[in-house]
Length: 273
Image (tube, rainbow, N blue to C red):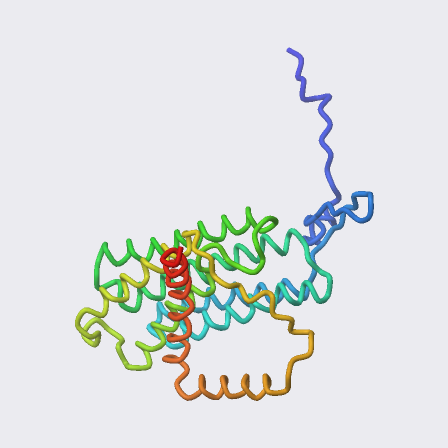
């Protein structure tokens, strides 16, 4: 019996080519009127994206160890890194499809999985199955929000988000956890009566707001490279000083105000029409 595999040719790359892992990331770009293939990844913007991913992972680890204040701060650190990676990529002209996908996956960890697990470990676990169901609603909402954003990014109005952005939703939960940790509301016996249900409803509502079509201002129209009146800078310093007075409570008020500004503006607009 003839063995057909004898004439089969298998293309193999040299063993040494297995070592430079980055060479296996290849993108097809359009430069001018021709397509160009580029290997490797850009270092600087992806370092910031890695900071987002690490902060989200650290938030989960800190919550597992019962250190909810550090978990909340880590989520806010993830927000900083997430805000920087895109701007750095645009300023240095290092945008890439790999960076877009990596950023989306990191956002899912930092603003979808991490806040849901942190708030569940803090207080929702006392609600049993209802608690983890509400935490899952939030996480699923973040996943759907990111998937929709990725598919509409080329056609969406840059001035507005469709639904609550996942970093803003994460800020709502992280600031709530931070306020609770700052007040020593840690442990089922230390939680005020009814707090788990209030936090649970807020968690579920935040998840639902992410998948609505309610418009939210994106503030992407702000020109950070342009000139502004001198009075703007002292106002920014004053705002930072106010936040430092009681960071957990101020950040929670700001996050809640932004989260509910969309539904209120939408309801007001429909009422006027």
